[in-house]
Length: 588
Ligand code: ARG
Image (tube, rainbow, N blue to C red):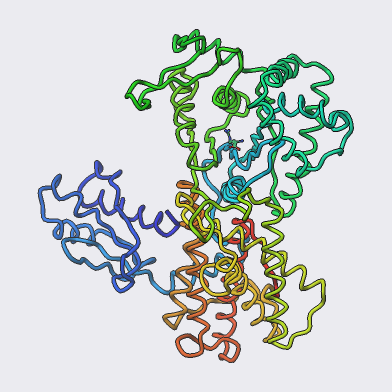
């Protein structure tokens, strides 16, 4: 709900009380945006909802409400339509005042939340000794944007990287490296991630085919868990190596994360099993300790167990998540915990949440949310892979986006007969290339699968990063052309709205807060992308020679007023894009 809706709500409350008595104070006016701008801006459906209770026709109720409703400062006289809708059209003068007010506000009229909370966003979370893949890229991009939006709304956000840095994979890898490349276990930087990944594959193959190897690897895990010095040292080196590689990607993407990997929770795992035992939830099943789940069955229709401790004493991914959950509630005091992973882990989280709830570990005021996303597909509709059917190294993927942007940019500059420095070209290619990858991911409803296409994401037309960045740069171009510093227009300039394209743009500019509070709730960043895309379209109409208005060659005071609208559009784009993790360019 935005500020205007909130004000209207207060007015409705007063009218309802005046019309029907004090017990109607809390009744929801059911205020929604008008479906068609011809009917105005908002529509209140409260008359229909009260019909039964009051035993009157909705139209009659509507007119009683309207009689008592004083919205003259905000709206034109309300109109009753259809079965009893109350249509409200904002007064132009009211919109002008609102725009004047947000001009000087760095938050552009978006108030910080009245209820700041500690929130955790668990995202990215790749696995040590394995390569970060496109799924992790999605998690990184989506999680970062969600975190940025929540931070902007004023929440206290902890961005956690739950890296997979513990478990059997290290037993395998260390055993294998002891054999083939022992220096890697004692010397820093002896391996790069490519080597690490291929050693990991070879180790896995040995593990699957060689019993003796398997046994040694198991013992190595035990040694690791027991804290044997040489194994622990080797483990640390391997983690360090991977971390280094992950950081390259994070730097390129401008991502901030606090690493708190699975190993962090290792000492807490026995306590989890103990407490589940105490609460009577634990069942022994063929030597494994498990909790039976409701609503999850195997193919035979029998209830499924969540195994928290295997018969060999080892713990599972789920056990660590239970420990993490408890830690985040008790120590971090999180009130909402958001997990950004592919939809394939939906069951995992549903099960972990269920067990934690049953154990009584989730207080009523704590919300647990799995934020799932779909697969990354190639243009052929299959899982996105390289030709040799390996996963695509992220570094290569991002480099390719930058390289393609570079090529296109050089061609465009030649066409436009523009001379630019090498430095300018490289900077633009990097920003546009990275933004294109991010925006392509964020602009789709995350729950669907997403088709990775360089051609689409780099298209200058359509809902893409280059289009949005171009819209921003174009506005900066207006100020350059007019020799005006948009920032110096002064905060007292009055906005005047005459033309319908001006009014449409102005109203849309005032909707940013509504969009952001929606995303804060449903955690769907594509809504913000849609808003920004629609905003640039509205701007283009406004600035269009034929459909819109004159700007630089308009008479005063219209000229300044319109420049203020340009400035506010640019600021809104910049702020909105920054919340998607996208940096703007003044020129491109
Ligand atoms: N490391 C996991 C993976 O690569 C993702 C971890 C997600 N977070 C969590 N708390 N389980 O699939």
